[in-house]
Amino acid sequence: METLIDSPVTFTQHAVGEISRLMNENGFDKTTNLRIGVKGGGCSGLSYILGFDAKMEGDEQYEFEGLPFIMNPAHGIYLMGMEIDWQDGLNARGFTFKNPNASKTCGCGTSFAV
Image (cartoon, rainbow, N blue to C red; front, side, top):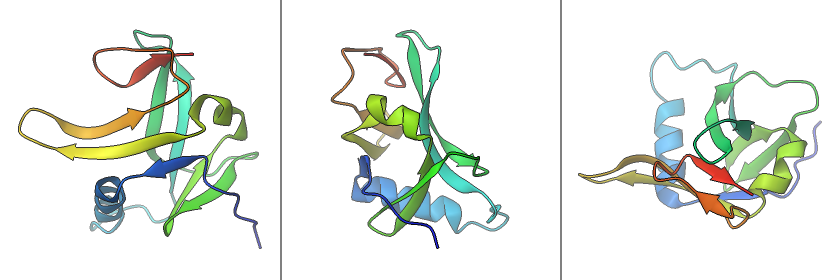
């Protein structure tokens, strides 16, 4: 049995609801996991990863209010304390990231610098 570690990120209720909705859609690949992370690139230097992916060696398993997700532990220094939200407004629709570790963010909200 795997040990779950305290979640390095949090999700708003809107984000939990939208991710749960996606995971319960017909045709969803139940062999995948929700992955949160970062990758190089974007207009500010690093971009967020939020998607469904296979678990890789070294990934750690987390859970936030019943929502399981995986993350490479090396990404924790960039993401610790981040809040993920889901916006469903007329002008903005999608996931947003409030990251206390970001020294600079871009206008699109998916890229940041530390």
